[in-house]
Image 1 (cartoon, rainbow over the protein chains, first blue to last red):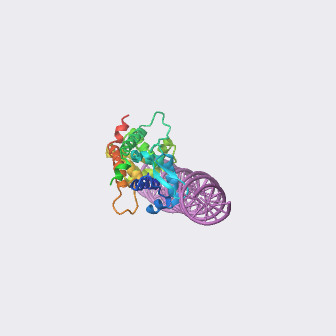
Image 2: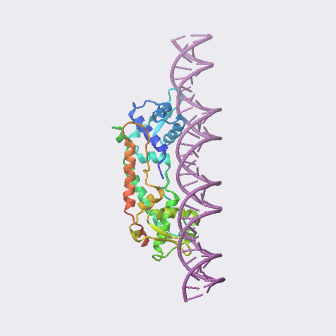
Image 3: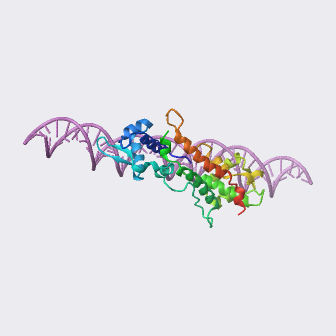
Length: 128
Length: 128
DNA sequence: GCTTACGTACTCGGATATTGGTTGTCCGAGTTGAGGCGG
DNA sequence: CCGCCTCAACTCGGACAACCAATATCCGAGTACGTAAGC
């Protein structure tokens, strides 16, 4: 049970884009160098963010990525869900008739964490 | 990023032991059947709980597992730590000089969840 | 009746598949901008 | 000066390989209990 590195890459990339001049396109290579990842792998991660509507990409010469307009509203939870998916962290697939009490506890624990992450905006961190 | 099935097995086993007559030894086979796991795999999980001091095992004929005296104090977090380990869910291993702000946010999110799980005792669930 | 030996029913722990997800690479296809060349 | 062509620099997406942890199995070793044999 650990967060994937991909989530870390995604968060750092977003933060880096936020620190760059607005609307400036930044190529994958530059982003990848900064984090010491292979560009192709990072691009895979970034397409997830594109599909989630957080950034947009421009292909062709001088292409790259940049934040979308409403990026200031993006929370940590949004990014995590975009990369790791939205399925519950704990799933009891046993067949004890009624709903699982253990499951319930775990799900509320998860919600505690998500409530916190929901209120952590990237734009807050970007100011520092 | 998901909790492992082993954690689920561990929690269910503990709850089942709590519902059994106190001090009665229960064999792995019976515990495994109930959860539809292989006995050998379950025993591996249970040895972790033994090492964590939550249950104790008796070998030989009529052997098995039973809860230790202070089991009522066992929290969900204890079990999770025993099975999954205590390392942080998120680790930024990048080399950007100062400590990572992202890391800090993630760690506090994790603590939110752990604070909740710390207060969820197995004995509470066992009553139901 | 007491002890000893043995068989049985367990757990314990190491070694070893198997599987699935994460991480990463490779490459062809499509896209855009810039520069050159001919009119 | 304008339009077309081509090239280079990109991103995109799928296919594939490497790796690692979770999951699961197998088996030998140790341990305790019960029973039966022997004295």
